[in-house]
Length: 610
Image (cartoon, rainbow, N blue to C red; front, side):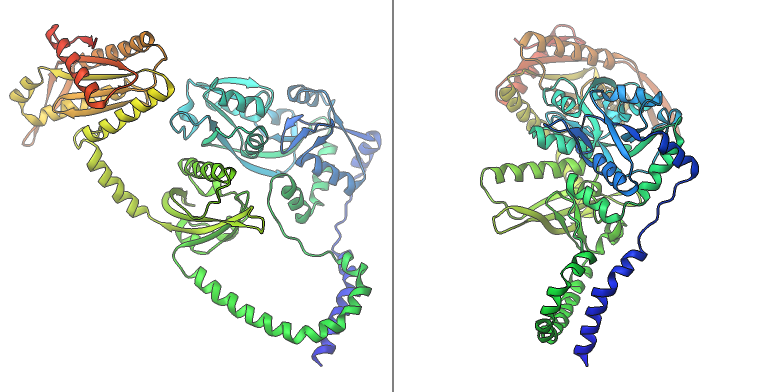
């Protein structure tokens, strides 16, 4: 009886499946105005960017290819219209022609307030992060605020040009025609950073072998790719939006898989089964024989899967898996306890979306190290690193990640899996211990121990880059008289204000440390490749520090319930040493000797060590 039911189900599936397929077919209807517009426009002119991979670009044969092109071909098949791509025009020229109604559709365009004056837009067909990229030779950028008054390159006419000019007018924009040109400027050090679409960046870095570049932050702007239509032709906007509604999820996934790299498994089509139904019928006898054994095996596997699911989903640690391009294919429910995201909100997304900007930088460094080892023929195994995770409520948590690559029979990496464990409290304790070990309690500046470590780094960097650095040693003139008159608590207030003033005079890559008492040390790293130019820069910074420290201070004095303010004036004697090599102890002694020369010269002066 079991076999009869089994054969009946197979025959029903083979011979009746095509009727169900026909019932699910979507219909497409046009209004009279839309039909009239199509009849008067047998060829629809489309404007595309010729260098915006993986969305749209010209290949070596002069053909347009990419994600947007595939969508257009699908629309042509769905509703039987013909597109003509306008060639030999720049992106800026395409936009101007579209504004005049000379082009009917613009692809891979992001909606902005300015563009809404001229265009109607479709729903987005691709949404990615807008990232900041630098050459990896400086400090981590983090966000757009830290690019004020710096050179940032973007593509001319792209949406990011408009939003940066509107929201960040202090950023100096360097306009180029293509993403590859922009990234090359970053690698050559001619600009400080590039801001653009994450998928376009990733594609260009791989194609142009720009491996030294790094993701150095992300922006608050999303890159939502749409089709745009001139307001003079609302009919085509309605037609294309209806046509895009006919594109199934499977068809969209196929496009995404081809150009972006997601791996989406699809089932066998009903038409294929019907086509080979004769052969299947001949195999039914064999299947019938094996059916019982398969059922038993399935039952055993389901039991094993249930047991495995209990093991993976009941643990506090997060178990995950990605494909080779770092798109999430599995994540355990414990991620919801850790970060607040349900599994369906994570699957299919790139791992970068799980981390903070600082976390992305950490992951990029790990990816770079693994790639370099693999290229040398060294197969990597487990890796352990700590990284910041973004939570759904906007907070940040630390996680320790244990990651291992999955390989095929040839040894090629086809994906990654691993475990993430929350270590937020542990990390906070480590930071507190580090704060006590390496930072001055009063001023929060680096102490002697951390100063020597950073000075050693500056020496190594100067030696490697063949650039000079500078070391400043200074103390406060007449500081003892303030302590003797008002007490050490008031002296502490002065030291704290001094630390804040000096920090505002130096760059983020430089260091100011409290050496002890009223003595401070400043390290200016990576100045110029000539000693004279480095000396001039060091003098300008020392003079700035001397002037800012000589400005009057208002110090609060607390006596019981009463609070009063003391106006105090002091100055600093500064010794400066310019170096490109040496021993940290000797360098500190020389800078200290220069400071005493400044004191002997009458205080409130600057003296260079000769």
